[in-house]
Image (cartoon, rainbow, N blue to C red; front, side, top):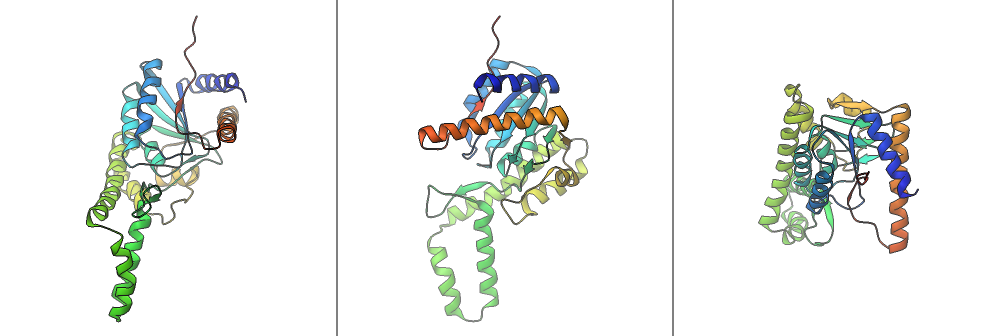
Length: 272
């Protein structure tokens, strides 16, 4: 798909939604490096009534989604997130700061489980709860074992690789996830239904054991999120736009030999 075709689809989506559209499409972790490109795009658009963010991301850092929401809301009165396919973990956190989330039959959110650096292999990111479940398993094994040699055999190699500061940082990341979720829900998505805030935040931060668990639009509605189901022409345009960006990224990956990094993309302003 040519760039002109993607621009045409974005403009069509803007007409259908009566909004200004931004696209964030990434296979790399969501982090603060996106904030400057986002700000540039927002300045180009200027203050407007409604912004829709087409979002495709598998997640990333715990603090970034909150910053993205706050920045976008400086430039609009209404904010919605459109999920063509995947908005997982930290990207699901970003959804909580919207007034609504638009989802189709294949769209999926996920548990809010931010990524942290592996305690040994620093270039590898792991879900923070995976580390915590390791501690939980270790604790249960120690409690249930009467043999001190077995306990030592299991615990020593693990504890030798972790320092107290790192463990504390992981604990902070888990607590921060819940705090951000509650803050965004109470300010925005569930501001008219505050009784649901803690329930939804708890479900998304502690209620699922698989990092990759798929929360489709029906389950998202059952949780209490403000879901708008995309059908007909609206969904066709959203899905076609997703396929266009997927094709673009695959082409760039093949040409460059690596996955394209993250970036906000929107159509340029028209000049008369």
